[in-house]
Amino acid sequence: MSNDPYSVTADELKQFIERVEQLEAEKKDIAEQIKETMAEAKGRGYDTKALRKILALRKKKPDELAEEEAVLEVYKAALGMI
Image 1 (cartoon, one colour):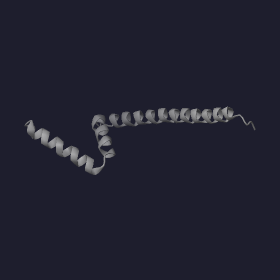
Image 2 (cartoon, helix red, strand yellow; image 1 turned 90 degrees about the vertical axis):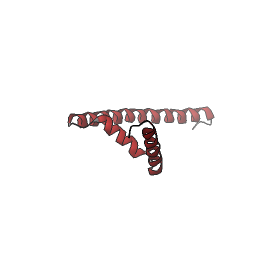
Image 3 (cartoon, helix red, strand yellow; image 1 turned 180 degrees about the vertical axis):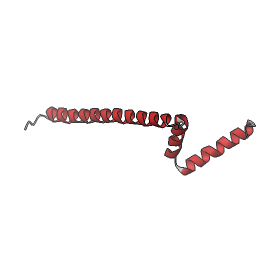
Image 4 (cartoon, one colour; image 1 turned 135 degrees about the horizontal axis):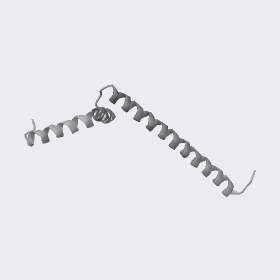
């Protein structure tokens, strides 16, 4: 084993790079699966824009969502939309 700190650093750096490359490849595969799933939902008559909105809402914390909805209601009322 070499005592050269640069060779150890280079090996470690290479491992990080390869791990990120692998994760990027997995991310690409997952994105393709999501695209296919949304296409399938669209093919079965679901509104993909609404599905994406639901997905975004489900990611939010309940209190965050409640605050956003309350502000939205105030704005809609101010504009005579409700």
